[in-house]
Image (tube, rainbow, N blue to C red; front, top):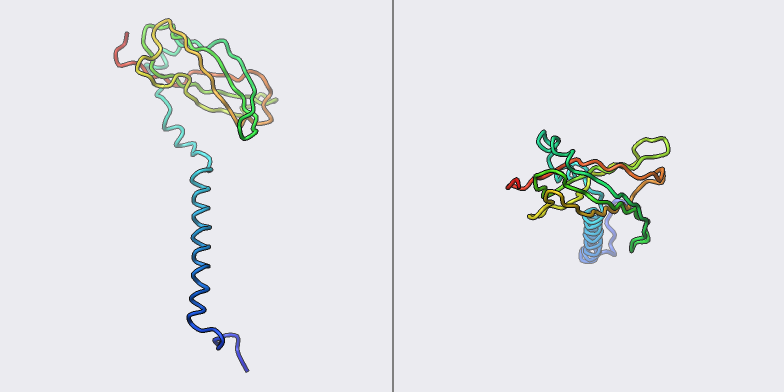
Length: 170
């Protein structure tokens, strides 16, 4: 009488080892695929996104009234993945006397109950050595590929939420 724990006399130690190798290769391939997926397609960590935002201390808050956002327009397009994207366009004017080299804005899309459906902080003016001089206007364009269906289709609200000044003030 055989018990289920006895060795199979037809299997040699070599044939058992040869069956382990393809199994190990399969496990390594699956783990590598999962690692690549999470590395490439994971959603960004909100805490990491916040680390890149510009400062908005007392000096920047005092100057923000000199930054004027205007001429807002919305467009809708389809990207190469066949996703609908919303594009917010507008102009930013530096009405003050300080050169601003970078500007962040927080954009809010609202739902039909006037609650925030999507809120993101994005650069309106990417950091550049020349910056936005006094009296200059720059055009911006922001793309959003994951605006919720609950959005009420009213123009989103954009508010300056970060500034970076030039090291030479004029």
